[in-house]
Length: 252
Ligand code: PGA
Image (cartoon, rainbow, N blue to C red; front, side, top):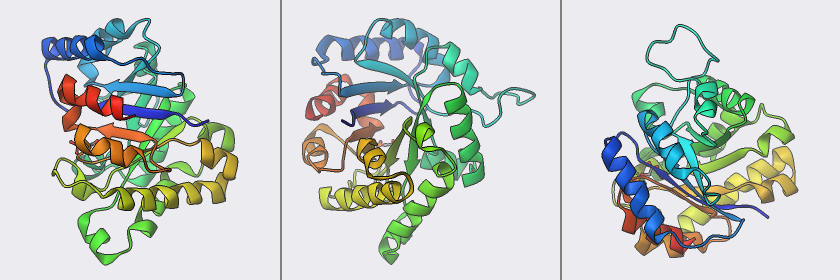
């Protein structure tokens, strides 16, 4: 049975004190979750060891990172390797977020290498895909997203692919307050699942968690998460406020 996941991506927000406080507030109201439901908190790199010690012993909440470097180690000033994340108890890493693709020029080939580094270090990948508005308006979003998924992930073996979570995040919905309708999300998620099924078979596709991201909040999460192919969410802005994040976890 595939997992439902709500992952909070803090992006470049919160200092160490604010981060510690937010995690404490989330703990206070965290509902009990069964083993098919997972919460992930992905703070900035600087927070990881602090957040890891706060999460120690919490099975329901895993630590995530927002990025990793595409090489194993070396002279890459300012960068962080997947092996370092592993040593900080990171279980998930977000790869291919549209902000990384756009502002840091991360292309498909680099993202595929990042995926490899994560898996070599036994870190599960939350692989992001999603189209810009002009592609949505042109009606070619299925092909666009499909090619991102293929280029970033389809070099993996079936065994490796079991460690992949996909997050569909239409760029026009990220931080804009404009959410995809549940029908738009469901259509794309079903398409992604069919693409995965064609490559890896129906059983693996059925076990793959596909998250929705883009202006997800407590008020729309229930409807989005009720879609048969939407297995949770990757949450930006609403992950920075405990009551909102908890509301979304409750919707899962
Ligand atoms: P948002 O961001 O929830 O603030 O729209 C989502 C994301 O970028 O993961």
